[in-house]
Length: 272
Length: 99
Ligand SMILES: Nc1ncnc2c1ncn2[C@@H]1O[C@H](COP(=O)(O)OP(=O)(O)OP(=O)(O)O)[C@@H](O)[C@H]1O
Ligand SMILES: [Mg+2]
Image (cartoon, rainbow over all chains, first blue to last red; front, side):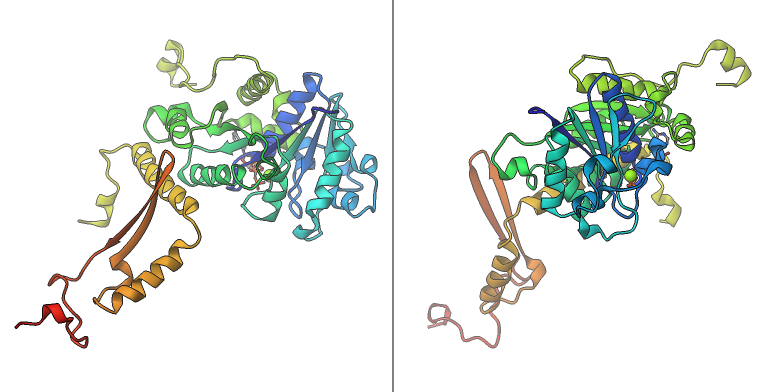
């Protein structure tokens, strides 16, 4: 493919929803008919296979391919539920430095021959692993929670995206940045207990791709090893579907950013 | 003021968070953009100024601002209380001596 897009899902801060987002996003792109590979860059702490529900099918991993201990197509796991979707798991044991610049580039170039989209699940932090995940990216989804340290780390990541990526080094147009706000509680925002979408957008000033509400469906999905986007009726599932559609150029209104209106019935009986 | 007064019940916590973040991020950006020679420049300037006036590390600050296509290097030195006091161990320059 000549116009393969490499998308990094990154955040700086840990535990904000990168892996959840990588899995949902990759499946969403595949469901739209795009041949998609999702790559776990979190060497030593691989989790993407669990979220994707393919942990028992992992034989070879990213580092094996870099070290030429396995061919790429031996390491790629085809998703059983979705056509067009493949997973490249991270290695569980090897040290983090095993993701070399040349190694990563070679694997990504080989993936580019077959795939339309390559989604890179970045590890937390701003060190080697995160740097490797973002270096070759064309676009970046910056996952942010409405929480002060997460917003600050996102700003740091934006600084790195603007200065330390291959596109910048080669004087091409910089990595296209998207803000994805996750674990959002409109109710808490309306009570003044949580930073709002508007606050965070003002501070980070990059285009908003979407807002994923704090949702019970995420835990249920990860328990089952099914990306939450597959749960078409859940709030988080729908929010991720919207994000993918927006990413692909559709103009869709934001949902799940206002508090749920309680029906008169639930007001009387105190339910939800 | 007791410890618990810090949790100001009248101000929404999100508002406090936004204010703190705005300040923090502006500061982070300045740190990020500053050229790597600035701290050394600051140290060397301090050493030179110390020859004449008694000042500390904290009394000198250097900032670099960008306005469109022009960069402004701002050097701020706070001189000690009894303004411009000479260091006692230094001889007074010619001009300052009483006739
Ligand atoms: N929208 C959401 N609602 C509720 N819980 C969520 C949501 N998004 C993520 N979580 C939960 O947050 C936790 C961290 O999610 P995830 O593993 O995707 O984060 P991460 O950024 O990949 O973490 P790490 O930095 O460790 O790789 C998980 O327990 C997940 O279930
Ligand atoms: Mg993760």
